[in-house]
Image (cartoon, rainbow, N blue to C red; front, side):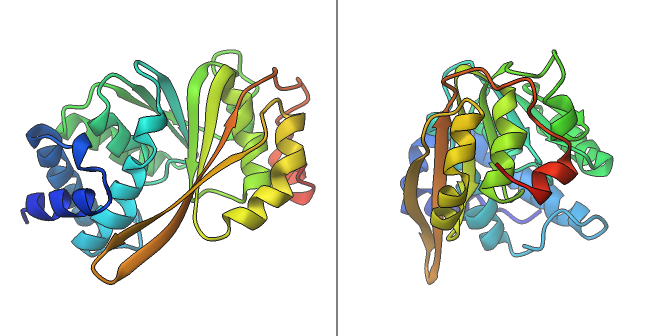
Length: 241
């Protein structure tokens, strides 16, 4: 197994995230990278296969959301895919109960197996579609924080994610350079769904000659989401709010 410990610490330090690290979670990130790249040879988890890029573009990027998660929070990651930000959050914040939602069972099986290998007991998987679970009494308005990363445009995500957020909770969409345009398109829908006006936290992630423009787009849950939302996905996609 390649030892990425020094590189993890260096990239986190370059981006002001080094305070999140200790010897235990660095070791877990090492194991995560090795397992993900091995499994990725057989299963399409990510198009990023260079260790340095995995650390910067997946792990450090996921870590940027950590300081916005309240202590002992219950978190849902919608469209978790290969487990980002679910797995890094579970590693960095053992106090947080992480629920990883995706419609692809194979990817969730990978996350479950990885969690066992990494001895993470604070992450659970949920297999299904967000617009269905968003209507369920067991999931609707049950979470302190809901995240989504590389899933869909913001005007679609708001309808998929805000129904899960409890009153006073937070929805965070992790976005790239298209964030400004997406915020403009979604600003009326987020109010209709019970959220507050978006706060846009803009920053860059960098290492050597690599620079990524990133945005954390945040809305607080101010009112209950009307019962008519979320709609079926075809309607959401065809006519976003």
